[in-house]
Image 1: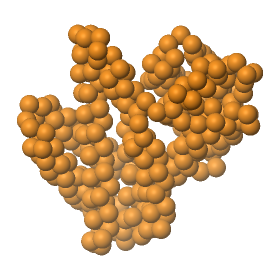
Image 2: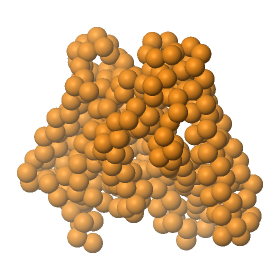
Image 3: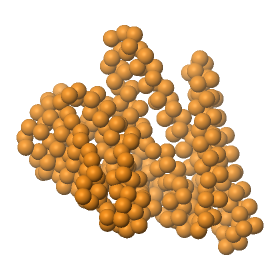
Image 4: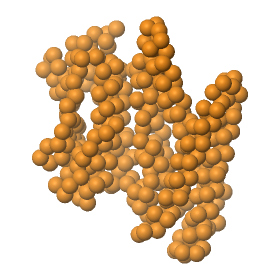
Length: 336
């Protein structure tokens, strides 16, 4: 969130903490409140529950929008007079756009919580009856694919909001379109779908184009794809959490440029996908792996059992992740 604001020129120096931390805390508190409300309404009829959740999400978005504008005006009128030309007297259409962005955030939070709850229920049913095994796998795949980092969403939406309040509407519209394309790929397709590796790489490029709003030329992506593997099917969104790790623990933590390189090669029997997170050597690249590696490992287990493998570790100039997939098995799944 703070990084997106700095990249857009909305805040400067230590004031970015004052301006962003209260809004971030409020957003997190409201997301928790919506989660608790969804639990409270679990026994209600479906149409009643979702109508109330839709109203609650709208109210939360209105509160977030009002807090955003009030805080900006307060700081502009008291501490940072240089903000007055864009923070005071905002045009109604820009307030409406900010409300739409916050509505999007709140409703997405509700969807993520619902997916997580559905996964927990599916796991319980799987333990009770073998007939629910397939449904449980699909639900878990959906929840894993929906594990987008909330910091990424708040960074992006805050960056769009910054562009709007400063009158850079065309840039805001372009960035909003990129985010829409990325979320469409994340949320619309079947959670257990297999997609060509070329499509997966296109999704990664869309994600990194959004992140470029924060990092500019510091962030570089290189892809190498064996022409014979263009149609190789892989689990949808398999690489996104790994690339997100590379951004968070690589580019974001160094002063100079960083790069991400993805290569896809094969020998006719096994396809290897390698992701290298490199930097200028000043530190930070590839430190830690956390949920990204665990997410990808669990998805590979769901799809292939012990037929696929993933390995990772630091290298001389960054961090490396390698995934081996059984080409023959994948081709049979694709034909089926």
